[in-house]
Length: 505
Image (cartoon, rainbow, N blue to C red; front, top):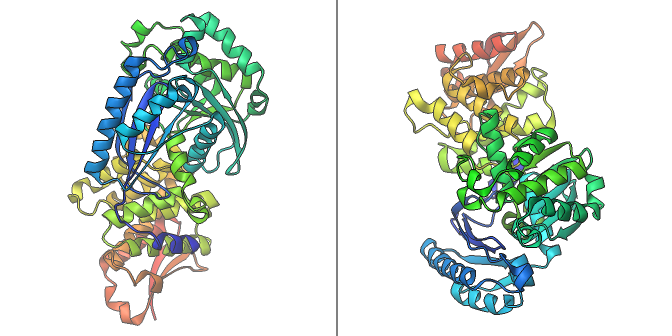
């Protein structure tokens, strides 16, 4: 019940905040809907300026890159005013940190953006990247790798805590400069740097959390190659050998040929082979169990660091689902009651669930009414699409499909066969059955309450010794009983191998 109190204390006030990230390759603005546990991007725009190109050779940021960056920052300032941003958090990373003309550029950049800009030390950059992964994958256990244009941050994370880390000069732009554009020379540079880091030994058998646009592109290509049914990059997992295969493929291609690969960003064609090479060498040196893509990185970590301790420790999945419930359901309070009421299935021994399955059940209940405004013929499909594609974090892909499937069945009925079979392949059979049972309980609840709060806490579900499933109603609610209620109760009971019975006291 603590999670209910935490969720009910939230607010839907729109107080957007912005993060501006001035990196070695790109300058990016992300505006979020507020400083909250599960912030949603309102605007996300980047310009590939290449500030770090040539810095390791000349010692200075290129003049043309500076002009592009300043133009982007002036636009970002105007967008922030248009949206009503209440605060801007702006940071600059490796290129501005290391270039001789970095300080003068930052002064001009602050004038263009009309906001202060912090130049992050390598250690701070690594910490924010790790916090970003933890904010989106609280159970992360492994090494975070954040690949920027000029540097690679590696950080050990476990149990929501950051251990030590290191910044290595292995960003693609820097590698191009240091190797003269030679992949073989870049390979030797990468191996020498990784060989000096004890983090590679700690990575063995654990997860490697890949952060950065270059590695997201590789994951997108892997999805295409494998016909993966869910095009959500966050928490997308690739087995080590599979990830190494796609990394080796891209590392061996020329920029010209990469521009013809539809799954890859054409604007990153020059740097992709070197970013892919970094991943390949990490997989060889560290031998992780798998690669997990994190859509959260430095920017989300920066926001996460601004939250108080209580908010940081809250569940990002439930926080995100609660935001959905408040925006799209008829009664958010009813969905909280539904989450508690459905728990009787567990309390009565009708189903068993792990702590993870319990939080997925609660999340599904909070999303159970999000499509009520749609035409009845499309509510199930709309829910399936919305939930599988929503920007939820704190959840893996099977969990996401389970929630979507439960809400789909809530609208379409547990016997519906209209679910895409490729999505079902991501779930164990017992989770598919669990989704049907939860959906049947939802369908029963909604015909009793009409989605309005106050009634569910007074209704009992009870397992009878004779394999019956008792629905207990108070006498004052007896008139709610009818053929539809009996039909929904029978459907739930049948899935549980029981016989439904209504008892009015």
